[in-house]
Length: 217
Image (cartoon, rainbow, N blue to C red):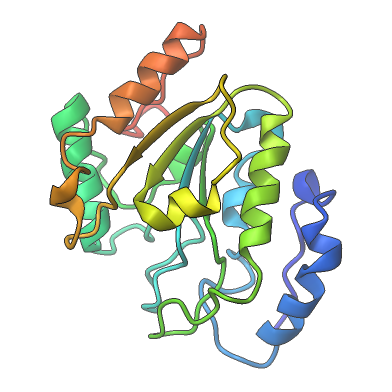
């Protein structure tokens, strides 16, 4: 299996010199998802100056064929996981939009960094690589994007809030709520209107809003 190559636009991050070699060695000679071609998909989708919105997930879906390297996203034609189904339900209630696929690549193309805090997982074992040190990459990537302009943080659940702790600045937007998981969505995720709030903030800054339907991306 060919070793993944760090995306050039992000290669300056200390993570790739300090933590990545050990993680890379642990990934060799084992099965893992989403695999070397997609592990850095969230960072490959956009360079630091292009990031406008940050949505943090935990780790890739552990079901083979589902994860595509973007947080909460699945490959086209894959049935929606329950959390993503709730995200789309809130999106439709908030904006009237509903993407035709669970593949969130169109969001990434518009400046939404869909970054998991662990970028690899064992098949069938959610969270198996959560303690490998991947979270350092998430924090460093966000800080690098912040060097260019303010960001909108969409933090769903305690895990995302903890990983992002201390990073948002007064000029950034923070939209925080419960996680969209079926276990917690009714505790504050539904009705939080994250998508329209982000777009309102972007428009106030003179930036184009995100087309959350993905139709124009």
